[in-house]
Image (cartoon, rainbow, N blue to C red; front, top):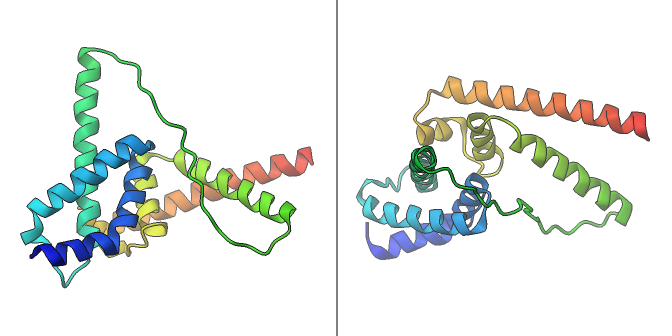
Length: 180
């Protein structure tokens, strides 16, 4: 792959890859590092990137593998010398234009924030699949290929994630109705 085509891939999928790195790490500093490492590794492996397939999916797979390796290294280091970890607040503001009343907009933002918190409480395997499906907009087959798992496992994790989010949101809504 030539440098020009690789730059096109970066411009086409860079925002989604960065957003995914931010989702994985929960910190802008770590996301910046992971994003840079991901594209450096992608450049090294550019001969393997299929232009007929989905290059974004391949690059997201690289990001996942790099993050898993970093977490594994941190776990080993933490066993040797325990350290306190600093995590940036996970405020991920989304800019949207709505013609709703301020009250409706505030309720919508509160609901979105609650759903985001519920999803973040899910196990990492389920959370990652849900993120790839809903935010990165990858198909079930692309997610399976990216994570090197069967499509049935992807479907199962999506179903479990949806059910858990639905149950937790129902509990939250019941609490709101009881308090309101």
